Image 1 (cartoon, rainbow, N blue to C red):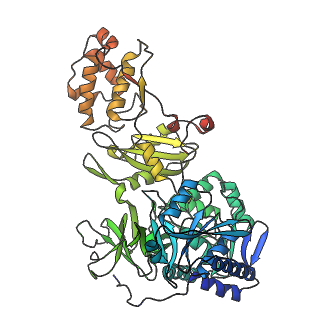
Image 2: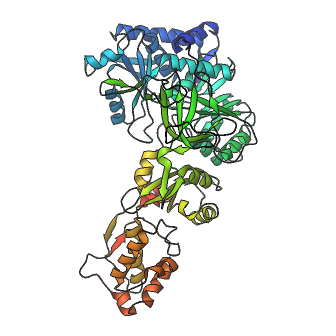
Length: 620
């Protein structure tokens, strides 16, 4: 393992690199937006005008200036002007809810707000909460480049202070590593507010290439592919789940030959998607990027070469200026094939989190045995090093669960589900019950049949890894950056079951209805199949004891516990109840001394078809 090179290069800031490109490529087209074609010379002129307006507004050097806009040529020019005015940039997508925008503005001591509207940028000077907070940033010539927020997919968003040197180092690396040329044309698909926007926009601009900006905020599969084809796009940054949606919805689309680079990042990338993508874009080289916001954009990459091994693809090796290793639970460095937490060290990192009026470093020392003084970011991602010395990501730490003492990686469950035909993307999480955990899967598909999927999974996974609930939807909720809304889906998976009083009783079916209610209470789940095994539905050796007690009390019968292992479906247990008690009593027994047996109120948000979503609560 190579140590980090002691010397650290100093790079010119991005706006300086773009200025250099404006001079070298003055007549070339920098930005395409609709019918507008903006040359590098015009871009430079626009930036200087906005810079003069900022300086005239009395915004002091080093201030945090928020730019509220949607992706546009004006937003790009304004961002460059903020840097050129020696201020720290915070991008806020104007499509975000007003409450979310305000939360971002309040999270840091913002001194100025610029709202981009059409061809103008309106500047408003505001006072920060306290001078003490402002003093952290208001220093001329500081390395504070931008404020980015974590996506919010796994918890409360954090404000991260990005570095000029780190940002420029990555952009310079990407330009050099992939020989980005002035004749390249990048599609700009990323919304503002996410750090990926910086590589979307500035890798091409420092290279003299062209950034092509869609006029529509959100592009469906057909519109996106048409945009790539009509604009002769040569490079694009993509989130895997969005790419999967495009290629599955547009199966049979004629090949698009202009694309030469696809940079995937943000989610695990599986071989099936890469195959589908390269069928559509046969001349595109696929690159898998990896790296958290804290370490600046990406710190790992791998060029994927067909044919690929099945499953999730490795993220390869660190880029120049970074090292990585896998840390075991006992603090030692993992060997090849051993699983642990992925750690990254780089001098081109962010300045840390801004919280409670102070900068807090997310980097720790003392965990890298060859050099205990090295500051390391512990990513929270679980992975291992393969025989080629490449990092393979296996999931998140919080995706490692135990059910009945068996350690389960939810990423593996997801990977198997993704291999089922007709599935666009999958979210898998654990649901805590009173006794243990169960696995819940949300599937994005127009054609998937749950019964067929479960038969497929039973043939490929041990029973302990089978989802106890599978919810199929035409579209799953997403964050503004295109990633799945993990937080929202996890909340839905753990939403309490709603019951209502049973106001109607069919005497001929009361026994099976009451038995279903007992199962629902014990399993804490919404939907049941009368022919499905109790253990396939998430039951275990603890919950079956509870089922046994409640079943005997509900029907006033005595049944040996071992019989429930033999009769493990609702249909078979109805017969078991009848065989072990007075049939008339079993069928007609009521709990007069207890509340009426509950009836499950179906949460339509989890079972509604796409056609009925407009009239029913949906997962949006």
